[in-house]
Length: 53
Image (cartoon, rainbow, N blue to C red; front, side, top):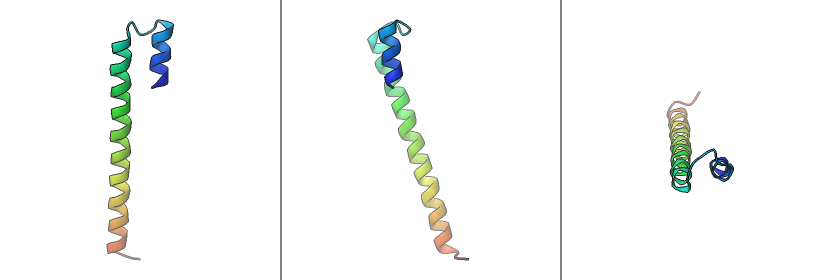
């Protein structure tokens, strides 16, 4: 996210609200990805505990 604001300071991104929106978007994608990874790991752990080798 800091790269977005660095780009805004350098002039790559035209205005601050655009940089802020993109930062929110990137943050939301990161949180969503973390949740999906956690759910997948929990599902595998639950499956392994139901069927021990």
